[in-house]
Length: 110
Image (cartoon, one colour):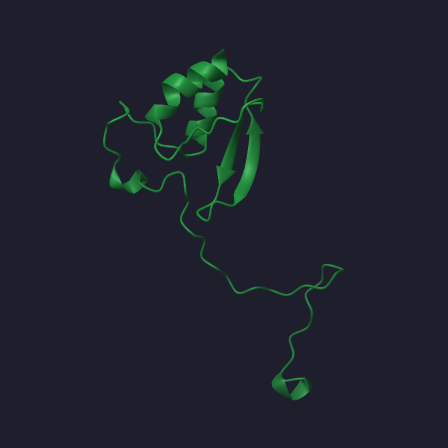
């Protein structure tokens, strides 16, 4: 009954949170990335309505006052996080040590 109350009463208040009913399946929160690739599945069966609401908010979903309330611009893509700044990759060997840096003169394969 706790999950059902969350689905019927709380989901409409969250921006970018959708409910898909799968007959016979245990309720779970499926987190997707911007390309709709699955990131994680979180079972909800043993959680209270309050715990589910807390989890969803901790994950960064924006909760509106009413289902029709506008969403501030900074939350339009919430809970998506900004793309990380890509740092140059450091190659490592299987033993965890960083391979030596070679000059072009020392690398016959370059």
